[in-house]
Length: 67
Image 1 (spheres, rainbow, N blue to C red):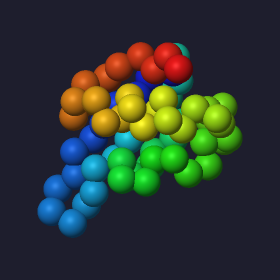
Image 2: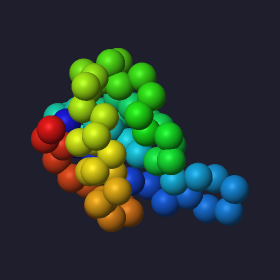
Image 3: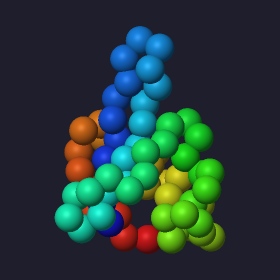
Image 4: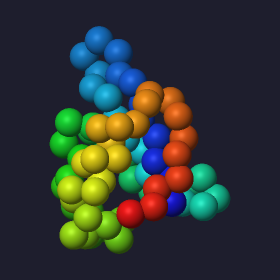
């Protein structure tokens, strides 16, 4: 799974994208509210680790997600 942080403009907030190994979009959520419905993506119970990864992400840099 891969993660990327997308910079918003004006009234559009920053977003986080989760992509699978084929780079197909599997999740798209706001960066300021990332810890909602994580069970849908197989990340339940990993809220703190995911929040730490998101806070350290640079905008526009694709990164492998390993929690």
